[in-house]
Image (cartoon, rainbow, N blue to C red; front, top):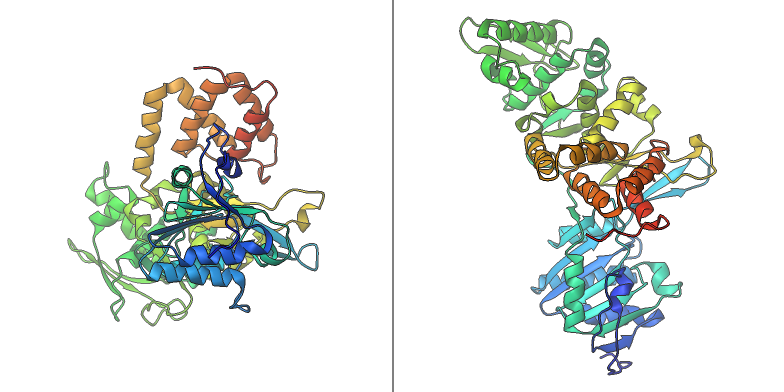
Length: 504
């Protein structure tokens, strides 16, 4: 039992702790001060007594493999035990990145907060999410059985438990619990995903060997690149490396079926297959008159042998890449960079992010060129297929800054995106829609329907002049400045002098 519990009737403006300033709400509640060293035993006891539900939102949970009995580990174990006895558990974590400088100016350690905790919870079958990367989830809150609320400054870290001056309270109030749960439902959540659906295994060598994909890039052989990936997608893993190729299906995949006659697109496909056979030594092509073509996939290192799927260094190319037609949507450089993201994210120890310098990327992938990587990554970012993070600007030279961090996002159907964007244009009019997309481009969000619509609403709320000023200020920042984001635009609007919202 909590011996320090006092039963009081108070006026509580607790939502201010969570940053809700729209209105003050008063509650009658039972409150216990669990600041300092009272926090850990109080929270552990409350979690252990949970009967129906636990909703945990935490800025940082720091788990250590070396300290299995640490206080954070104990709390996570208590949460998992609650899940195992039938309690419904949901966890939301902040996903923002910390760049930690080590011994030398250019020596960086990149930390994703709460990665170990996220994995442990997910492995235990608990619903665990990262928040939307645009905003910080800075809350440190637990809601238990829709009646017990724990709020304060305490993260689940060794420093917070044992060294810092932290202030927290445990509150018994069904009304407050429901208000906070409703607020937490507004958090945009992203599930922690390591593998994205069904995929085709592809050897790293395809991208790393200078005689394969890097040579295709040098030769601008985009169609050879597309056709070979298609062949790997169609390969069923048989020991003979055999594929029966449908010219019609491949023509549809390449986008040359409609408007082309059969002779023309077959001639084009045959030309590419000969190129894969003679220039790149990747296949053996056996044309058959009026029938499907016979293809034998060949070994990269020894073309005298048939292709086998690598059992070690391989990555998975999601089937949705083909199903959604991304080979037709993306430029050649963006396709190559998408595959680079698949490789690097698969082996990253800072998942869901990965990080390499531009020099490291070009060296690893056959010297494909800085421009290919720079422009390809930018296109993927604008298409909302990756998220990009930057080290914070300071007085340190550029060479001493940590390299970019990349995170793969889930593939989506570009046709559905087009319909969503069109619906916004239809709803608000072409003029407002076009201006919003122009502004969105400044912060890499021109293909984000939610941001485009919010820009239109912000323009109605604050006026065109103030919105333009905010985007002009952000647009002056370097393209790799972390402040060049829509979140900072919103912050500028909210803080501009006399930027009071206009009444509707």
